Length: 223
Image (tube, rainbow, N blue to C red; front, side, top):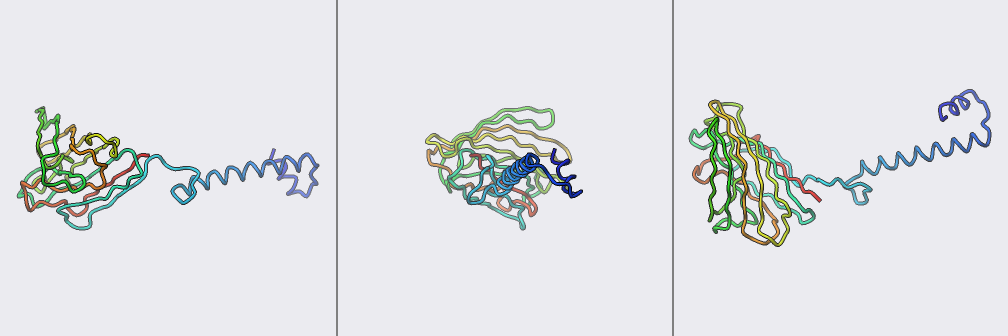
């Protein structure tokens, strides 16, 4: 319909009153679509008509070797997703090293515990540990793994502002020249406080270990 009307206008053929009415309706519909798309594009501004259910809190590529990374967490979300792609150096030639995580600066006590299922090559094992000062963030390729290798981790924290102890659920995987590992973890922070910061750092067994320049970390909040 609109194409026929535009063809008439292009040939200077007068439109009837009915055709003019149809043309006005078509342009109103086009304006509605334009305004809807504009609202989507403006999501996250002061007055959006569409708000994405998952939003970036933090996303950064490390520009230098980093011993510890602390990220502040806002209070506007229900759940957290944390992703890491990293490599560890300064481990003294280890093929892989754990990254640890602490919440709200709780570093000196025994308020953390975890359980895991783990495989390295064809070997499968399970383990747990309590009375810790950290949860695990993942097992990452280190300076003994060979060039180009890095580990990846995906950690979720459901209802990070609840009045219960905070549970984290994580899967990680890393490869190096001689093996492949995959782990599934459940971690617990025995504190009822809302999580307001997360600190990520290498296993203190290797005091010179750092997250290598080029490692990537992202945190997303889910409404």
